[in-house]
Each structure stands twice: as C-alpha cells, then as structure tokens.
Amino acid sequence: MPTRRHLLCALPAIWLSMAFTPARAQTTALPAALGKPGTLLVLRHARAPGVGDPDHFKPGDCATQRNLDAEGRSQAKLLGERLKAAGFRPTFIASSAWCRCQDTAQLMNLGPVRTEPLLNSFFNADRATRDAQMQKLSRYIDGLDPRGGPYLFVTHQVVITALTGHNAESAGGVLIELPAKGDVKKATEFPALTS
Image (cartoon, rainbow, N blue to C red; front, side, top):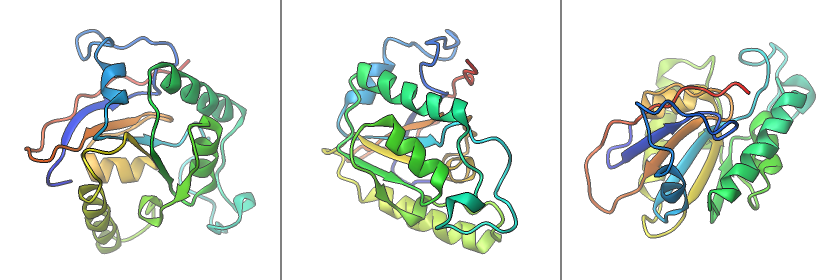
C-alpha cells in the first residue's frame, strides 16, 4: 500500500454508460477530481479475454500474449473520449510493457505513452518478487509531484489489487490523490460497467 496516498475512488469501466450506484458515489464530483493536478488515475487495461498469459508468453512479442479483442479496442477508444469529455488531460502517461496495456493507452489517445516496467504484471511471480515490485512502485508514486499531473498509469488487475487492495474490471481502476501531506484514506469502489 502507498504510504502517503489518499485513495479517492475506484473507477469502473469509466462512464461507458455513466451509471454509477448512487449510494456509493456522486457522479458530479468525479469529473472535477479527474481534472485536478495531483491526481493519479491507475487503470486496468481494456477487455482482453482470458486470464494471465499463455505458457509461451514473451514480453516483446504480442503474438504470444493475451491481447485486446474488438470489444476491448472499442472500450479503450470510448474510455479515452469519456475522459477527455470529463476534462482529464494527463501530463504524463505510463504503461506496462504488456501489449494489452500499451494498446489500451495508445487507443485512449490522451498523449504519448512511456513504458514503465514497475507496472508490468506479476501474475505467476512469487511473493517476494511481487512485494519488491510493489515497494518500488509505491516509492515511484510517492515521488510524483503533487502539484503536477494529472497522471495516468495503465496496468493489470494484480498490480492494482496489490497496490490498493481493490479489484478492477477491464478499463476500471483507482483514482489516487497525491497530497503533499496526509493520511491513507479508504478507496471508494464503484460497480463495474459492462456495456
């Protein structure tokens, strides 16, 4: 868990139907939070059917990976459009090296995308590997300028869960406030949007 983060809200497959559960969140506050400096939106890649990667997986070879399907590509494009409409203009975008994350980030069309290995999946890794990666990622996030941003990371469900304790559906994630000072706050989850 990040040590100096205020987790504002877990985002579903954002605004694909603009139908959040009223008891859990107010949709009117979300766009303003997204556009603020000092926020980090950590998203799971768009829809890529299956779990993990095939046994012959190679990080640099998309043909060996689990990739976005047509629905996932459409989902990523729509997500980018909805984020732009909400005033979200990230000043820095980083993605896992996995093709499904890279493709999601590119299809969202929100700006140049940098590959960040700390966002890579550790689906079949041992606990020590996972914990070491999460410690480094938490320090990386702690180093982001809270006066800068907003920032966007595209990663995997396992990374989001290890980082925040929350699951994320395809194209969903967590919005994190980067306060100069402050306590860790509980994230608010939203239901997944499926259409």
